[in-house]
Image (cartoon, rainbow, N blue to C red; front, side):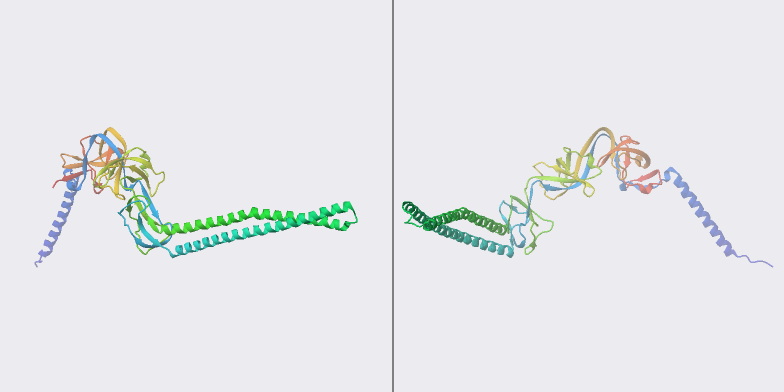
Length: 422
């Protein structure tokens, strides 16, 4: 008996065998292609940033962001709390010293002035009344003293006559009458001394009382003047000539402001300086007198470091850079700028552009362009001093070598990369 063969199963098995053989062959080919020099991964040259190693002078710079600020600026603050009734000058306006830029109002200050004026008027009336009373008291005391003096003189005269009569004849005046006359003279003498002392006290203290009241009037007058000054301060004026600069939070009419609150600021035009924020790790290389280049995005201004802030704020140190008086039109107050401070000049060194990763005095690997720009091979480079955009090369490269500075971390597993030009 003949056995029927399943031809369809045989064909399917053959196809599976040939497919497995093809997959294995392709894997072996890919693995071998990667091992060959010509099998290096390919990347587009337009996607990398390269630079040529050079020999010459390296100018080390320290970079930081900053702002242009005026050298002379005067804040205008509210001396008295009040409501803004009218804003006469807006930021950007040119003002002269004494120009009114804002008007405020406060009914409580007006009431305090009226009360102070009332107290001053009452004090003037009291002084006049005090002078009158003291004068009347003086006149009354003088009259009393004169009366007592007359009585004393009369009693002394009677006593003297009685003495003469008693010496002439004891029968003319009794001893009792003589003693009574002597006692009356003594009593009137003591009373006269008392009245004279009272008159001296009145004359001596009258001026002191008047002076005390006059001092009170002076204090009340000062209080009135203080209230007047507070009302006058409601008319806010520019202390110096210049340009009004904007505030971080602008004020509006009808807004209530507190005493001491900033109302505006006046900038004296023409003189600006740059405040540059340098990272604290690089600030120790900066000293006063170094040259700084200020970039305003449209112009570059050369200045000089004049001050270094001793404190660190938010991880940076602020330095002041003095600028020349003749500034380009792009230089304006509060303009954001970039500052490059020249800290050192290195002559006769090998240098290149600063790579994406790698800092000063480090050893790192870079890709160097070889074979007329068709390939890039990994090399080990030891770096030296660094600047903003350049870095010194101490080992691993020679002048004329072209190196890739952009990020090549995706090719960390390869020592050779094919470069493709479009």
